Length: 574
Image (cartoon, rainbow, N blue to C red; front, side, top):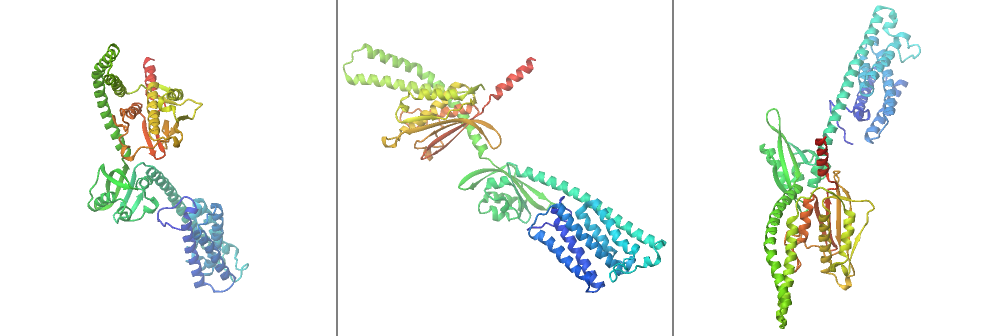
């Protein structure tokens, strides 16, 4: 068990101050026992009771500390209260036998009264002063030497008569001293406990704020010891915070995270402060970009006392920057595609129509010429399909925030897919129906195109490797609400297939325009999906492997901007 002995910090609860109570009990019992050994005989009932009391009391308190036994505050107060009563009794015996009412051992009463402040506060301390006064004055008033011969002696004041001025003022001054000491110590202790409670509250609030920061935070003192290491730092660096605290930052960071170590080492040795710097670290074979800022803690003489390093994982920010760059590139490609499509489509239509007229009007007997005309018609139709995809890609813009129920759209796309050649043989579509509507922000036409492109891509991937011995391919569609750990709500649309998966070397390129692994593909299917999701202010993720691929699309569920605009218009009109 780890015990913290801080001179100015006490817990507001008794069990939190148990170490101080133990120390005060041990100190006072040590004084009592030493004084008794010096001034009184080492035999008799009182001596043996003192030994027994000490063994029981100290044994009990040490048991509580060593075995970390949690006692109810009321029980602990009762036990310690009984101990204090025994102490007052033995102090009365010592004072009575050593100097009587003029004994210097009156100090023992004062020490016991002060020790009560650790347990009972101001009111309890004043009550303890009253009890101490009774134990002190009783032998004087009642001459206990006749009741307890050999233990109490007749005091000098009692011989004078209690009504004498000297006797009265002596007892009165001692009692006033008891109450004065009790009030001062009790008042100081209560204020100290209150201040400690407020300090503990502030510390808890501060710790709670630091522990719940999304940024990692490490504090290192001038000896290289890690003083603070919050939870986010542990999550980002994959280091246990409990093991890191009080360890040398060199042993924690140098081998596993040298880039971060050298940043802190530079600040600690030279005072150089890093503001919004960036480093890359490797955690579990994964490269993570970190944004880091360091600041130096300085003492009164400007000496370096420590370094604070605050850092955060920039993976999401880097991904967002990449998406913005891709969005700009997509917009440029879209404009270019639209221009090319319009310039090519008109002459292409003329060529296709002219060839069909020639084929019908001329009697072509040569089979080779007839095949050439058919090939021209076929290729112009394929080029027209590519141009249609170009135009679809180019026309995707920021979608108005209409509220659309996705359930009927999914059913409609599935019904359409069943008549498509790629779905007729050995490819099934499974959709877990939802009785309640699931909403997404955006136009129904865009959702139809998004779904169609994804399930068509899955079907073609399945059919590319499916054999008669493999059985049936399967595409599963699921649509529900998804709540992130931070409380943000999304509409999640999932399309899963049991195809061959996407090879690792192609995974970063699947959303690029004009990239396709199919011989007759345009390479715009998944690019259009990504463009639609981006215009819907959503995000798309995928997970792939030998057992298949799943695309998860996260969409804003409500038309927030439209609702806000309508409310603003209503307020303006009113």
